[in-house]
Image 1 (cartoon, rainbow, N blue to C red):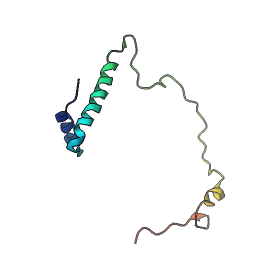
Image 2: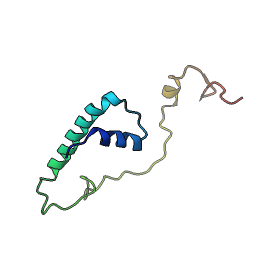
Image 3: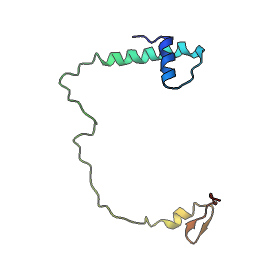
Image 4: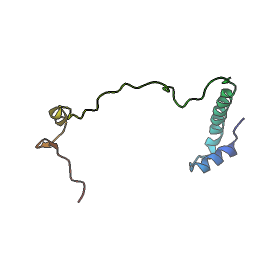
Amino acid sequence: MSVDKSTVARIAQLARIKVPEEDLDALADELSKIVGWVEQLDEVDTDGVAPMASTAEGTVLRQRDDVVTDGNCREAVLSNAPETTNGYFVVPKVIE
C-alpha cells in the first residue's frame, strides 16, 4: 500500500499538524515505507505462538522488606544546595 499526498494532508489535518505543501511528497514516501514494513510483519508465521502482553510474563520479582528510612545522607544532600537554613533548602518566594 502506498500513501499519497492527499492522504498525508488528511492525516496532518486530523492530527492538527501544519505540514507545508513542499513536505507532503517526502512524508508520503516515508509513510509508504513504514506501511510497507508493517505489511512485512503480516508475512511472519505466528501460528502456535501464544499472545502475550509482556516479555516478563511468568517471572517473579524479588521482594524486599518495605522499610522506611531517612536515607542517612541529609548533610550530603544539603551540601548541593546554594543556600540552607536550619537543615532545609532555601528557595525564592514564588507566590506574592
